[in-house]
Amino acid sequence: MSTFQQSCPGCGRALELPADAKGRLGQCPACETTFTIGEVAGADKESSSDLIRPVETSDPIAEPIASPWQTFPATRPLQISECSIEEILSITLSIFSARWRSCILPLLIVVSATLFLVVLPLVILDAIKQAGAKGLAGIGYLLLLPVVFAVSVICSIGVARVAIAMARNEAAPLARFIAPVHMLLRAAGIALLASVVIGVICMVMLGFVATVNAAGGKGLGRIPAFLSGVAILVLAFGLAWQLWAALLVCADDKGTAFGSIRASQAIATRNRLTSFFLVLIALVLLLLGTLMGIIGNVVTAPLTILMFAVSYLLMTGQDVADPRDR
Image 1 (cartoon, helix red, strand yellow):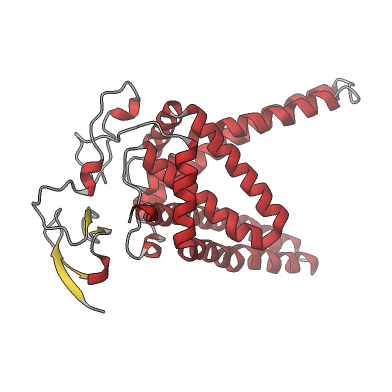
Image 2 (cartoon, one colour; image 1 turned 180 degrees about the horizontal axis):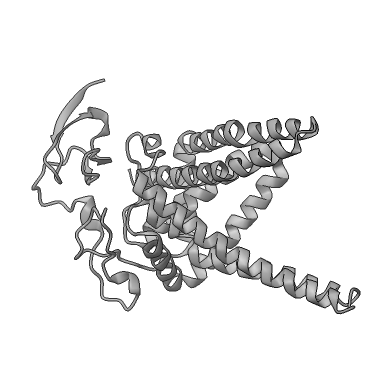
């Protein structure tokens, strides 16, 4: 394969790049500056780092996000804009149709990691429990909990990074699956915060039902139990509605854990109706994938993740590589 050299516009490092990648977005492995491959440094074209522009808006995200790992100028905050669900779905389907093989590969990595690092240990621990060593199995389950959490965080942030790279049509998107340590820590913070909030909500609802039953209203307790279940579903939907972009902001290295949550809320606030339909469509795709089994999930899961990545880029004023624009 023929290659050529190009200097990184951020740090000046000489990079050896494939000739057939000209016109695509690339990222320097040293300073993580994003640039257009084949574009001469200093030309009068707008580099991809300039896609994050100041904008007059009352949204809190318009203020620069302070971060020790910030890779964009502090005077260039995220630009939040409105976009329609029709535009998002149209671009998502176009990208998925053109690059569906690359979209599916991250899911296969996640499935493989889950099988070997989570499912297999659970099978082994269950066998130990069945053999009578319940104490040893209990210790094993406790030790497995942080492993499960770590695998979920690594896979979640990795899939988000790959989806963003796919939406931008960057070269070698799978190389972005393994995120930097600081990004993993941020993603873990987001996951912990979401887990705590959901856990507290569930405990309050279950405690209310238990109190009603203890007071002697077991028959009446069915109504609070039903209402509590509905309330939990509504609150979970509301959290997803407000926080769907948090992991993507983190994966794009545009904020800390709290900063990513704040950015997600600002994005959802500017795009209330679109965000509502995004989460609703994601739930429908999840249901369809579940009903169709493994084959269905192979299609619906990558499509859902790509849809969220496209939405994030469009709503923050960043470029999306629509195959139809070629």
